Image (cartoon, rainbow, N blue to C red; front, side):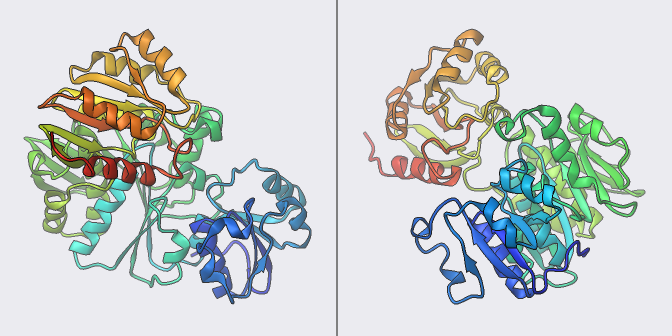
Length: 459
């Protein structure tokens, strides 16, 4: 642990009272601070979400301008949803007030071995695999971060010797300071979140920050098949390990004679045949490789890693089989929130498929996805929805895809897919967009898809 600020007895303004903000407040209380709780929303908009802070030593300042609250603040903690260029953050920096994100706050207090995983796609699958490998090996492991459990919650309970497996987003990396993972990985980088980061250069720089506090004894894991990841290796202080589907690497994971193989510091393990990995698709082979490299480096027995890779069937909302009805298979990939993620989902389809696209506008291009769909032999029909519908229509037409159908509501889109699909086909929800135009999160969108599909009776 490295403490960048002494919170004892200090008034700490916490902006953003979703799950991360709530747990940041609890962590600050535990360490002697007075949290001043702020959000753009007022108390009645939260329902019961803030009830755990009732009767706690906090100051409620919901619905107020956070800039005005800086006058009495000794430090500022921001939730991941608060941009680094928001007025309150810029003003705090101008005044010299200490500022950090919730991830950074938790890292300053969490005891255990910290592992950080980031990338445009594959984070949730990889951290879940790795956490499962540690537990299969009999280790105490905590899974948190961008996956939905705030790191600040784990920091209140973890002990020395525990494994702290943390999914890290570019939003969280904007506001780190001392965050120092013993092992860290960037899985891949493709265009995403430009409404927040503005340029790819900035987005890439945020991803690379996961390595910035590592030292010579730490491990940095990168995708050898991704040119952006390859460029990140220059100047890193940590030991570098690669993973590659396309060729052998001197240090890291690769495929040899059909076996997922890991080579580290002169040791080599052939873990299992690639065909026995429980999650399908080339992207999941990459996720499995990244998890295996870190697991082997942190003393997971190869047998435990192999058992996990065979048994693990994926995470909810990521190419998740829902049901088969009237000969049609329904697949929930609501976690496909960017174009590259949807490309990977499309590539796992082995039957004619009706694809649902569209949602919240993150200011990214759909042109590469549209070209990929046009070239895919499996995409038979398209249904487009949401705030990005007009952009999708233009870019799909320019790529020469099948003419998309349009739906006004999510329910209409799913129902239309049932009408379009023929026996032997798939229906795939993989929107290539965030969900915020219709839902509060991708999980809610995926649950709604499953509820609609599971509510149907056969023909």
